[in-house]
Image 1 (cartoon, rainbow, N blue to C red):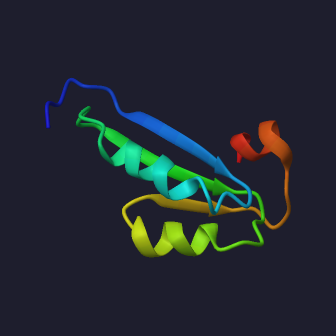
Image 2: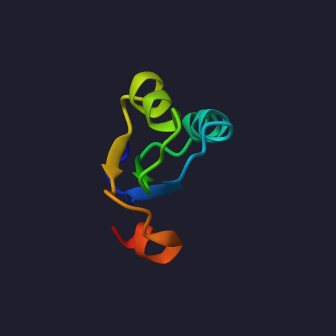
Image 3: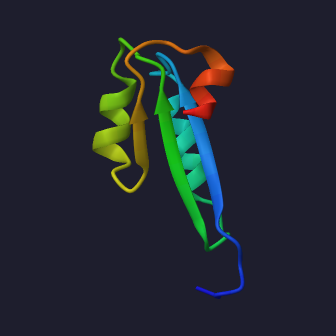
Length: 77
């Protein structure tokens, strides 16, 4: 990986996104930029979306909120 490329952090906010989380994260894995990190922030989902993330995308970091903080506060976590 070229040392001079800045790290790009991709934040994905999730709340009960079972239908969309897999295609969203699959699309991120196809990026060609070599210096990225992905953080999935969960706003206390009650569906299986976080099970999908943890099982199928273990390379991504996860932050789990203990309640739904909404968009702005959730992204700021």
